[in-house]
Image (cartoon, rainbow, N blue to C red):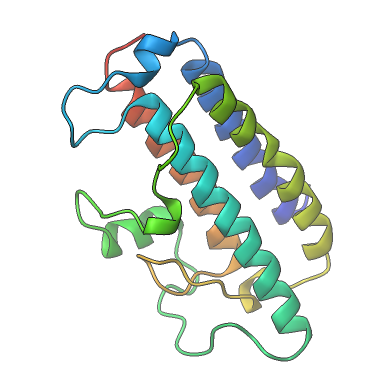
Length: 175
């Protein structure tokens, strides 16, 4: 199994864990918030959709720009070779502000957001096909909070991010 196949499989596994656990909630549970500043399961799921949607788009953009000789980012790779957990530990505060583009803003039924979130596995798989012959460490797509990440780190981030929000939903004590 190639490194890219392994990364894709790890994201797929994280997605399945999220969908399986969060999918057990009722609509009432999915919309419940212990306080106004805490996200509900719906908020978390909508956020995951927007964040991953933007990441996939950004990786495609970075890949095509590199292939045209015009990378989207140039500079020091301050996280070269580091796993995403180390990068997050070094760059994130305890409670971060979500970039507006990835913020939950529509609400609605949990089943819709679970379906939308599940649907992102196909474009991610298609992206892997396009990345198959690329050096993942030479394509950089910066993250809003962590800075320049290569494609391996970006895929690790997707897995990490899904698991992080699954843990947040499970901590609400709804299940």
